[in-house]
Image 1 (cartoon, rainbow, N blue to C red):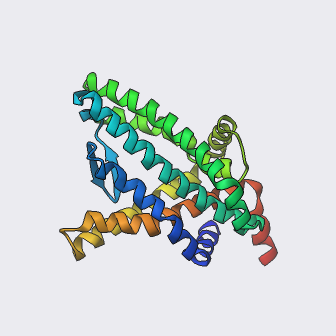
Image 2: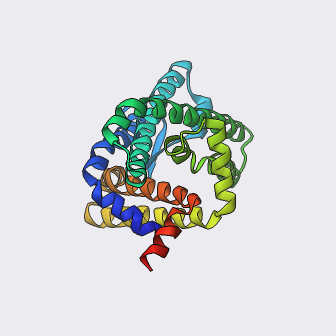
Image 3: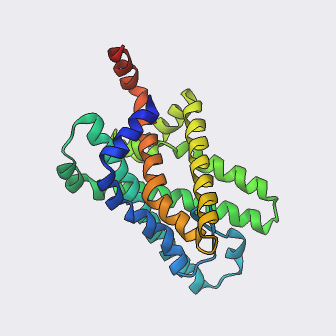
Length: 245
């Protein structure tokens, strides 16, 4: 039911999503253009924390600016996708809502992501200095970011303050963890399929093709899917299913 609603929303608003998805592409490209220590994997751009301790102060400034701009673009795209779902489910005027609220929501989501990134960066650099195993870094990353899984929908759809949004997000995950698991499985499957097919078609450019596909199709769909999963807490989907019967 959730996937069907997500697909319907994605299909009906594809034009708007494609326009807003430019922000995802810019967000991914910014760290690369700024020559930060990044690597490309399954259509995403990631920072090499192991390289951070070796950088100069000027390098650190460039990295900070690049990732701030990158996070702002990505925050804008997340807010836009959630506003589209909000329009579909709550019958709001998207144009008026966008003009009045998109900058406010983007700023809030951006600040949350910057805060989480700073915590993660500090921990990862410390682990790099201690030469900790990579699996510990992965676990720390999950522990930092997992509770904020629904923070975008909570801020945009329910208009919650960041701390309250984080509490609601964590509570929703605790109550329905399989929704997150299914979302992760679906996302990984799409990302790996995109990467594999792109490599078969154009091995020399598959990483860039994957970033394009992910920015304009996969990430917008996953965000729409995520928003619908969040809205399930109201029982709206179950009520609609019963009415159809």
